[in-house]
Length: 335
Image (tube, rainbow, N blue to C red):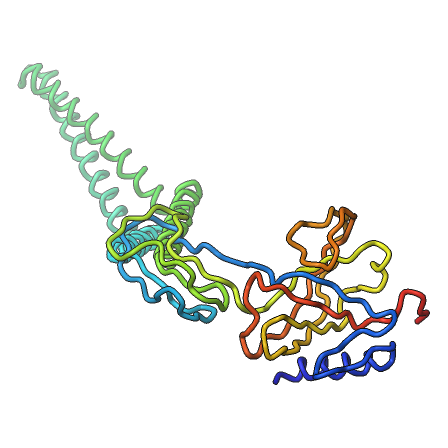
């Protein structure tokens, strides 16, 4: 028995004696002024589904099996998800390499090569100028043709243009990469990272795990079935913690508060007693539900109460009628 359960049992017995209750056959029985509530163990079921689509690869559990939190219950065929993850990783590495290249800027060897290109273009221009001067003098003396003069002039203009291009390329290398290009590359890297996270998320959601302890009620899909996102595959009944839903009328509302110890019994032999405490009291009133199994059912405003119960022997079943004894002082008692 857990320490918290033992503590609640001690509190229940002590309070029973303090407020005019008695313990008979291991069960707290209210005497004058005792508060008894009637209700049911809450029916709590969860429909489990994959977050992505695909064919079911394996279903690991059968109906009636107990499952623990985090246990793998079923998986889709994961080959496509793994390949998508690998592709996203490779694409991200390429984008990161491109960004690193832009941030680093040109290498020293590239700048030296650009300088050499400028020097070569300057030499070509000098030669073109000398050749134009010589051709012009020969033409003045009628020693060459008009075509030769035109060709010399064209070569000089071409050399000037080539020199301008070489100087511009050198200036770009010396200045380095534009900030707009770096920003664009960074945005692309972030996009690739987000895509990789998405593929990893899809791969993770292709494995179905138990969110909490429970028992498999229904095995809805079998291996080979193609499912869409959020299509139920398994239904489990939540077994831990166990809640009892009861109702208290307005005159006794002050006798029930969160944390108040409680004793729960059922009609199932041999009359086991379970200890718990009030976990929740509804802030709004409602009419008595017809499912409440009380000695006398009448239409009245009541407040829903949730009692959290220890269930060490796992004998409390969902929907089971239960009697709750609230270990609390009478309404006229002053703390």
